[in-house]
Length: 78
Image 1 (cartoon, rainbow, N blue to C red):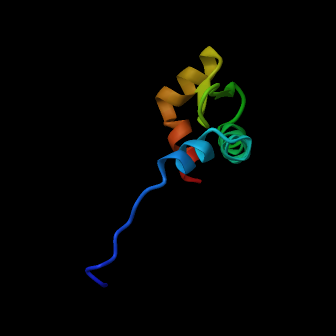
Image 2 (image 1 turned 30 degrees about the vertical axis):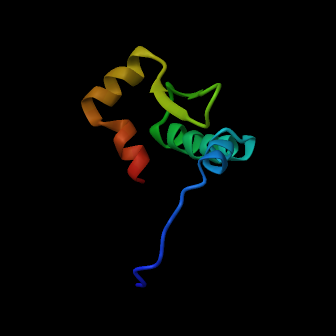
Image 3 (image 1 turned 90 degrees about the vertical axis):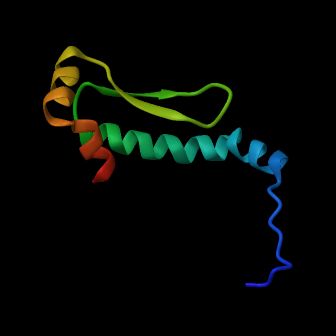
C-alpha cells in the first residue's frame, strides 16, 4: 500500500446515513428476524434520533427463558 494514501472520514455523510430511514429499515428487518427466531415474548425497540434497534424480553416467561437458555444470543448467532 502506498504511504501517500490518506483516509478521511466524511462525518456529515456518516451522520446522515445513521439517521436515514433506509438504515432504520435495514436494522428493523434484522431485529424482527432475531425476535422471531427467539420466539414468543420478545419484542423490538426502535430508536428515535439515530438508527438503532434493540430486541428485548417483553414478558416474564421470555425473561426466564432468556436467563436459562441465552435465547437472544442464540437468535443473533443463527
